[in-house]
Amino acid sequence: MKACFSHLACSIIKPSPLGALIYVFGSSIISNNIKNVFSIKDLENLSGIKAHTIRIWEKRYSVLEPMRTGTNIRLYDLESLQKLLNITLLHNHGYKISSISKLSNERIPELVNEIISDKSVKHHAISSFKMAMMNFDHTLFFNTYNKLLAEKSFRDVFYEVFIPLIEEIGLLWQAGTVSPAHEHFISYLIKQKLLNNTEIVQTKEPIYKEKIFVLYLPMNEIHELGLMYLNYEILNHGYKSIYLGESLPIDSLKDMKKYFNNITYICYTTVEPDKENINKYIKEISEEILDETASLWLIGRMTENIDARLLSEKITTFKNIKELVDSIIT
Image (cartoon, rainbow, N blue to C red; front, side):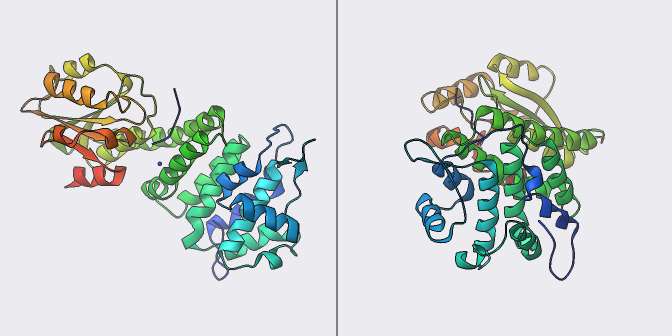
């Protein structure tokens, strides 16, 4: 089964706690024990710079020095990736590649640190997390996260950084740029943060008890980060949430009706049921689970394949996490 995720520094004037991330793209993050080699297409996927442009930058300005195979194919190490991400940020801030090429390897990360503003914190943090993932670096992940949290709420970090990161990692996996090991590494670390923050809000007594939310993933669906975050939001807004987790059979949903009334089931479908079976699944849920006291909310990539004629006031789809959370609040 394909694994897929369904989608910082200081100001020049006023130093910020995020400023310490000057070291994120410094040579200190490169581990001698991890050997990762990238193609030019991988660099394009990770940086957003077209392979054709990277070749021109190499030829005209010698900003990168790729290794070569016996058949003259370019290969790059983590240090090259790190440098390209920094160059990309500088270039996006108006620096000409001709000027960047004259900077020393030490000066480039220093300059990145100097120009980072609040508007580019998101981009810089995502790049930092990607580097942590590629280098299997727990320390870099936690340092980046803690510095973000010094200025942002957990909710902001998740919306502004983690969601785009998860979406990007899904695309990188599909393109073959990252391995399942990379994906599992970074998702486990994000999951840790979700669990930590959820535990805090779980200690609060629900304020609104007239509605129960039951959160689950359908059979063979294992990608639960989005569902875990929804669980956090529901609890944080004072509702009772029952989290049933991954790969849940429909019969288990029936059991919930023995204990609770007025249930809103929330199903997150990223890869399962697939597009050939999603409508059959919705029909089965409608016939066996939904009644005058139960409804179903669906979110995730596979909802794009649901026949609109199956939707009703009992069955609702959401385009993204924020849209669903806003419906809870209202």
